[in-house]
Image (tube, rainbow, N blue to C red; front, side, top):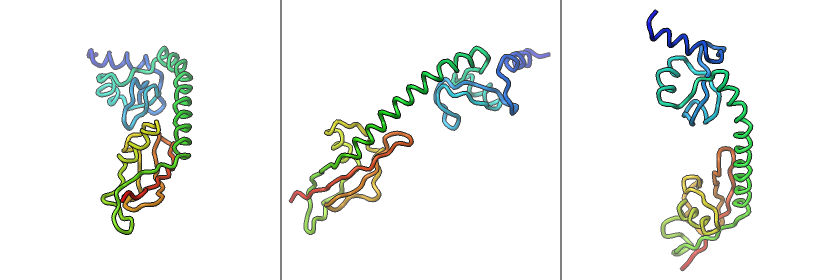
Length: 170
């Protein structure tokens, strides 16, 4: 028996049995397309051995690791609930705002240029709310004075509708 196959057998027998011929692993960090840090996932043996384990993205789900994972799962879930609660509070605060942005305008209140997501993010910052401009979504560029609805992405599954009133400065 070759040394490599002995090592493979040792790895296989020490892990928690996977149901579909794969290997159970615990993610040490977020892995795109697989899951978030702390998730317990089943992956193909080759993917685990050749990529995930060598890069340090996962640990094998042996009995000790699974017991430890179960202990920390509740703490992580509590932290996630707190983050979501904060995000929902921020979304509620954003939804209650009516931002007023003054912009130079010409005849018939047509703006010179447009109000951008950066303008809205800067105005939110003045209100004490830090939102990245990429999380502000405009249906179309704001080029007229008046009231406009803007969608703000706070976190996954949490969004707010913001009222932006554009006022002409002649």
